[in-house]
Length: 497
Image (cartoon, rainbow, N blue to C red; front, side, top):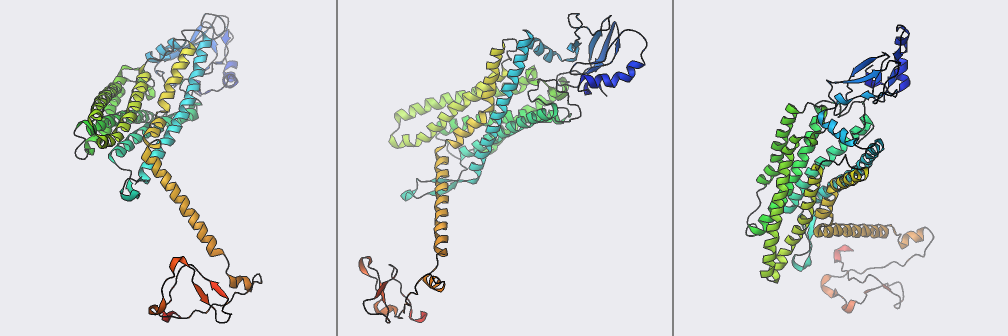
């Protein structure tokens, strides 16, 4: 067994029990398990070395050390007989710096920071799940339903697909967000199953469980797809801002938009960005699954274009607001009515674009690991709150809070309820027994038979005036016995009877 494949102290000692009986007389340190690796019996005054365990952020070419004292006790960090394993050489420089910041205070504060990280990750998973459901529901609404437009002649509803220019851009933005949210949830679920911890902070020796984290190439592919989704999301936000700017400033956007250029920007440029970053990571980042890649300087290959997109969108919004304010001052009432939908779009973009920019900027701020547990908790919970619920907020503003979408869903719901009630009434009417059936079963009197006299259409088939009920005379009854029939006038041709 490999040293990191043990799960308890008893298992470690039982494994080396046969070897202890064959040792020569002398002073030895007993076999021990440090919660990560099992250390074999070691002679006194000896430094035992073992290969580093296969954990994220660890250089597998290095070794860990543990010292056996002269009295047969594993020595501690300060020389006390408490036992301590030196894993310092195992960690990469980036991870070593993070651990130094994490343990800059007391041991209790470091443990509190671990608990904060676990709690914020649980909140992030809830937010990502809610965002995924909201985005998929929005895509279904935009794809399946048709808009109900009540602004036609005589206020009659007309149907049209939810495929106008803004909606097509929204659908691509939602698709990019779905990619990154789905990849994050898959990675977190894999970490929970394979290592028993979704935070990425525990030692997490996978033992016999194989997942994405300990599968070469597959792990890197998932992170490439994750960063591609993030880059595509920002590019489609740039297209949102650019479309609004062209819609207002370029003669109210004469002609249809060039979707080929939009697709090249929204889906093509992220391919180039992510490909260049992945190539650099393959050459320079010799760590399994590129653990901690967001803390390296290579990450700016992706982040610099994203910050550029946020800056461009802010310039677009400033220009749009300037044009809208000037046009609203000069426009008449009819022109102001046409500008009103654009104002709603600009208001939505004013809310979302700074939100995306703030979250992107916060994630690039170095984690305050060296600060107190409270400050680290504020940063951790705030960042995960903004990033995880981002898809839910976007879906609410662009879909669920959209006036056309709400009117359309209400119309379809009322139409469905109306059709269902009509169907129930028709079924109940068809199931009601007639008088003949009641008489045959003994629960009702036999109704009199009505004899219809065949008449020609040309004789006296004139409808009754003022909605009077038409009567039919039964020759077998007295003249006073008249039966009222349906209020509708029914004519029967001669050949029908």
